[in-house]
Length: 68
Image (cartoon, rainbow, N blue to C red):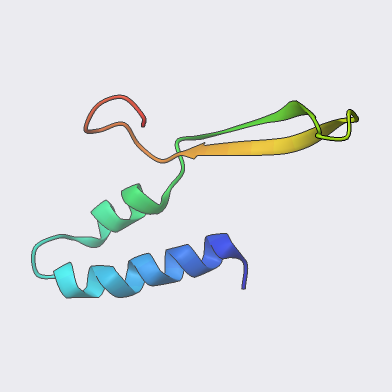
C-alpha cells in the first residue's frame, strides 16, 4: 500500500467516528486533491556537487483560507 492509499484508509477509518455529524460527501471533498505542484530543487551539496531533487506539494482545499 502506498503512502497516499494509507492516508486515505486512515482518514476513512477516522471519519467513521464522525459519521453521525457529517455525510460522505464531506469525506470525498477532503480526500480529493485540488492541485499538485511538482518541481525540481537544485541543491549544492557539502562536497561541492550540485544535485537536482524532485519535489511535490499537494494542496487539498482552501476552504478555511489560503493553503498553508
